[in-house]
Amino acid sequence: MMNADINEFITNLEKRTPGENEFHQAVEEVITSVWDFYKRNPRYEKAKILERMCEPERVIMFRVPWVDDRGEVQINRGYRVEFNSALGPYKGGLRFHASVTLSILKFLGFEQTFKNSLTTLPMGGGKGGSDFSPKGKTDGEIMRFCQSFMSELYRHIGPNTDVPAGDIGVGGREIGYLFGQYKRLKNEFTGVLTGKGLAWGGSLIRPEATGYGAVYFAEHMLQQIGKDIEGHTFSVSGFGNVAWGAITKINELGGQVVTISGPDGYIYDKEGIAGDKVEYLLELRATNNDIVAPYADEFGAEFHPNKRPWEVPVDIAMPCATENEVNLVDAKTLVSNGCSLLAEASNMGCTAEAVDYLSNKIDYAPGKAVNAGGVAVSGLEMSQNSMRINWPSEEVDHRLKGIMKNIHDTCVTYGKNGARVNYVKGANVGGFVKVAEAMLAQGVV
Ligand code: 2IT
Image (cartoon, rainbow, N blue to C red):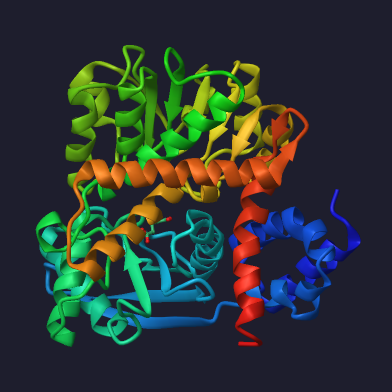
């Protein structure tokens, strides 16, 4: 039940930001979690910390013109939402996908602020991207798009100002083209982007970090209730970078993954997705077709067109694709089929109704805690760039493990509820406190 004050806050937000539904959804979840804590600290309210947190410090929107392979002029829209710099330079990914709108990037930038705070590394929150769809584009088209995008973005970012990275549709190849154009325009070789190639400033474990970190987090959730990864079945959605990293680590720890998915439907592989099948995901992604169906032909698995993997009975679910990919019906199906834990590796992977249902029924943790390993290793990439050194993979993985444990501990500290942990409250309050204190200390800015 929403209390009247929260209702009023959200109504005001909706008036100021009409139509930004995903942003409203992300704000409502955080506000509801932190409200009691906020009210107990009148200093926060007096300084209007929540109102300020909900207004991005800066939003940049720009035209991205480019020429396709047929010589036709194409126009996309580029964005960078610089949400909150209380804890450090703006930090967060770039998403290239047809569904990108200001609302999507504001929800992501807002979430990123609390996520980055949870990592304990000095990073503010930001997000950017474009409605450009890499689907079906050639390498040359992607390069020209990235160059045009950076020709505007470069004046707003910098290693001490704003450090973008990848997200959906932006991987190593795109970061390379973006970095090349930044370097050319600025005549500076700096750590202005993360997710770089190993030979030119990237960090070991960054590609794996989001998925590995999510599985480390799920492992802590399981340990909290006296269980383990080993011997459990998992459903995973998506087939991109996050799914790949999660599946690799689940296999390593003795779990079995039986699903992946794409916009075209889902794969059910009863034998388990392991070995060569996991590496095949990288090939599938490199085709730029954004379909998962070819996996079924390649390995003789079931393909279920236009459906989501949540109807398959499993012990543990890990959404690794995109926002609102688990709705209330999916959540009920998962639980009635015996699923006892859902660790969200996608950002806001569950709808608000699904979150309400799941957090009362099973162990559920939100993306801002579960997937923070990705941006955490980006933070470590920034540190290595500043020191001009490269840590070995064991060092990075060791730090990643420590950070994920720490985030889990923070969730327990702020979310403990009898024998159980309310991970939504734990992550939101835990992320909020540091940002709020830093904002108070820095005055009305
Ligand atoms: O959602 C995320 O945390 C990311 N896409 C990674 C951001 C980053 O700066 O590495």
